[in-house]
Length: 407
Image 1: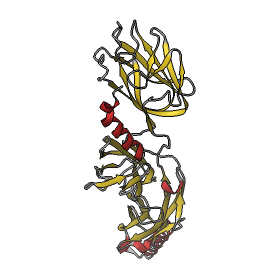
Image 2: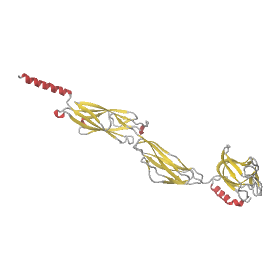
Image 3: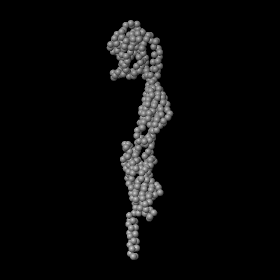
Image 4: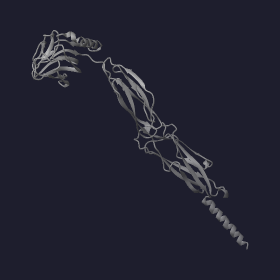
């Protein structure tokens, strides 16, 4: 065989082998024999025109096996069994590769009708690892040759691996960080280059700029994002990763969770005591009615403080409130507001007393931090207490009787 025509291919294979990690990297030229392969079926070595293998029979599998699993990069084929042969009537050969378990891992059908000159050989790319056996099935009436089998070379090809990122449950009013990680899962010697893009939407940041990476095999790079939910519920956005291997669109997801303040009297409305002769009480129940699962610190509600303010604040007293009380899902706290006054005479009759009750919680904030405050208007009308009215009636009656007795 005139092997000088394969100088370029062989040179490339040698260069590839030089950089490849396998110790047995080689191009098998079969110049002096099967070079360690085990031949089966009617696969035969022949030295006419230079050493090579050929399929002695058609319509049956001819094969060779490797002594251990091997990465097959490529090989060359010719229509003729040896140099100077002039026969043959077929053209197609089906080639298959199998692993050590006998599982087919690669196959191809090659048309060799255009390669009937001993100086013209077809290169068949395989690029498949863990090959233990290769079979060749030639159709009617021709006996193709195999030569220059390149094994254990690996093209330095980068590969991008990245996955979606889930921030999980995050309390409204707080933030959580998570990363998108890209990894070069390509071959040894490969370099993966590219960029990780920004996020979008009000809940995710950063929302501008890219971060570039350059990664060797099995190296990774991460970009950190922040999720700040503004309300309860699921949020998501996309992040684009571009590279010299492939491009990928990743999804960032997160769920905002929070306690939910509920009161027996709606916040912002008035707790009306009506007319009060001396003392009166109104009940107020506070409850955490979140519909999220009970997630502990993520959904607990803390009653941080309660104050009564306004010109008439000293007439009202909040009872049953303990600063720092923490309410888990569905838990409630019963409170009582007391109004008390001492009737001071005619000027106090029908006088309206007003104040404001403000309860501060950690809703929309981290657990225990100052969050949303809820206010209630307090109102009562002062009148004499019943005992005072009775005494006044008796006094008037006595005065009337005394006046009449004088006549």
